[in-house]
Image 1 (tube, helix red, strand yellow):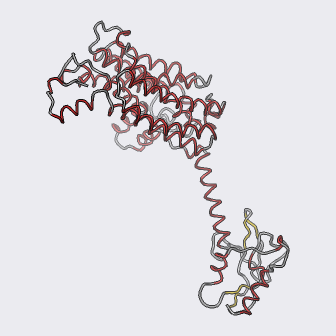
Image 2 (tube, one colour):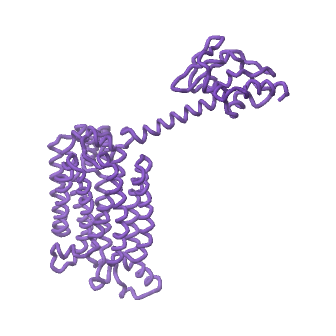
Image 3 (spheres, one colour):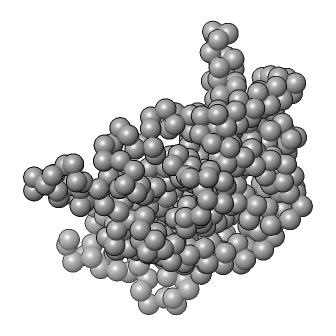
Amino acid sequence: MPPRALSSLLSSLNCGAPLSRRPSLCFQCFTNVSGRRGSPTIFTNRAASTQTNGGIRRWSTAGAVSNGNAGISKQFFAANSFPAKEIAINTVVEADPLAETAVLPHRRRQLERKKAAESKTSTTDHPEAIPPDASSLLSTESQQATSPFKRTFFTYLSLSKPRLSALVVLTTMVPYALYPLDPILSTVATEAPSLNALTLLYLTSGTALCSASANAFNMIIEPAYDAQMTRTRNRPLVRKLLSTRNAILFAVGTGLTGATLLYYGVNPTVAGLGALNILLYAGVYTPMKRVSVLNTWVGAIVGGIPPLMGWAAASGAHALSGTTSEILSHPGGWLLAGLLFAWQFPHFNALSWTIKEEYKRAGYVMASWKYPKLNARVALRYSLLFFPLCIGLTYYGVTDWGFVATSTAVNAWNLQKAWRFYKVQTPATARGLFWASVWHLPLILGLGMLHKNGVWERVWRQVSGGNSGEEILV
């Protein structure tokens, strides 16, 4: 740049003026608007508009633009302390806030960042950002279906809360498979009572139907409250896709059928546990949500019963007397039930925090909005409980000692998320704990299957060519 132009530029910056009156312009903006090639583009003092929109100063280039060594006017720099009385010589053109000639590039980037932040806040804080549950999505599918069969099928499937029912069935199957068999019973897998395919079919079918019944009763009781929450306002009874009478018939029918399958296909203890779960979920937990924060503990008991059902199905297959006390005498079943009981708290407490305002407006008494500190503290407390529960499974012979090491790593990761949520309750920490809990449960159950006591011993015997007739069946 020629010395004369440089002198004009420095004088235009008015470096000797008081700090409050100095103009401001970032170097990137200066190079963008001045031009990187050839002589710089000079804006005269006719480009001086001080219109303000949402706290962002805007200016227009209604004045002349010249090239050469002329001095750069101070008004070009559009400082934050732009004099309120300065007006353009020519007619000022209303500027588009995102147009290249309307807002300086660094101001435009600030505006874009502000809008992005507002959009992110809306996504995390407002109920509209919470995705609908599976029942709501299936209700939409039902309403859009052209076939009467599909419409009916999707409607009743949405009434059963399929995702929740699938989780219940999964937590029933894993304890069934983890039950440690006595090697005296059989040396052939097909003769093992707890590995009977027909028993497993009765167990999964009956459990799924009992879960569908409990979920249907839950929707029958609270459609007026479901309508007030974004996640649940599209459920079938809220949208009146079927009558309350038909919903009751579905709930009673699935409950009776499920309990019957469990009674005759598995054993009376499992059938009793399935019926108890329907009663607790629909008769105690659902109405209690509008009365006390203790509803979460009742819901956790409901979540802990399915593992006990799977364990009882395997234990009862070779019990001597078949009594409930004998079937449920092994500590392994109670440890697995405790694992699911404890898991409910970090999972639900993190989820409920993200929609606490919706719960409050709908009249649900949840710790997430009534006692937020307690809500976070309970999530942390039960995250700590995972460690002794997993060690107990190894101690009582359900898993090998490798499970202690692998489960500790997963539990530590979940605990870290729970600790962050306990220290500061924000949308980010709540989402972190929620997704950690979503992955935590299948990882722990999968590791339990991988480390089932005796599995690797059997694999080693097969690899080393040991006598298969003397293998210990696991």
